[in-house]
Image (cartoon, rainbow, N blue to C red; front, top):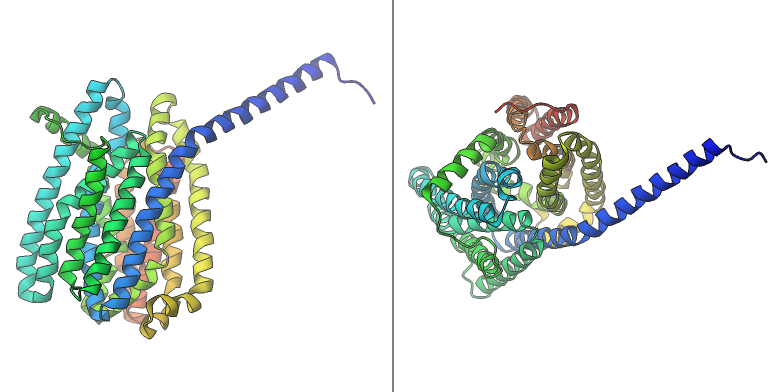
Length: 446
């Protein structure tokens, strides 16, 4: 056997050294992230399990039409949450990475101003809910009580979402997990108490959302996350302007996404009856755990990706778009495949309603849309961390146009099922645009 030349030996040694350095770097990265990811999964897992269990209980306990109305009000809450997430929550990590890491003073300034921005948003959205209750009461009086209950619970829900994201930004994921634990304990325990006392009603169930959120917020405040601080009005105005500059496109995109993904419930309730909307939500509930799982990854990863991009540059965002998209989509596809296979056995066991079990075939469009949305979500992390938000806005409004067109055509051809397949077409369109932009390094235009 011929011996290696001195030059070849040197190159082989350097290659081995580089490999050892890469393995060592990967090990250190895994060690740093294990706590973050563990608590992020605990947080999202507890939150997801709570909502999953509540949906199963309410679908079993409430008449199908009442559960359908519950779902409609739930979509209204999701709309407010989507606006808050896009306008405030998703924009905050990039702002903190640029302005809040300089000193404790800057961090306190951003945190204090953000608290009052969220308080203002919660108050304004609750006033709009009261006005909506008055208007809807003329058309559907049965929704007045639930909407007023949502108006009361809404400010606490907004604070919960803010404190939860702030815990991730400050690397206090254990606080987010504790918040989710208390939220679940109070929410599920309260539902069982209402059921035992025969006090279960649509308004009481929705009011319970606020009680659970209050428990979570108190947990955060006791842990030192999200505590209100006296702050100057100028700081609140500055942060509001920064959030608007980063989030104005995202908020418009959130409206488009809500219409194409969640407006199917009020649309179906208005056209075919609240009971059908309840059936679709019960089916979708089986797919919720993977949505929450990917959301946990999103919560844990976005602030750190924003920090990394601020430190090393935009090329890291493009690198993450390639890797993250594959991971998110693969996890979602594997889970949805399991659910589709197990649905004939699981649905009768969980819900004990033959109407829901008979609609198992509707899981196909719901599952496909969730896999496509997981792909979009991972790509969007790269764009959000770089504050490239206009393309997200454009993508979702194009997807909305696709949804409206396809839902109208397919709805006329095959009924309400066409609306579900319209969401698949919209999800595919939005995911394709966002992924392409994340990989190509689209520049920001604010």
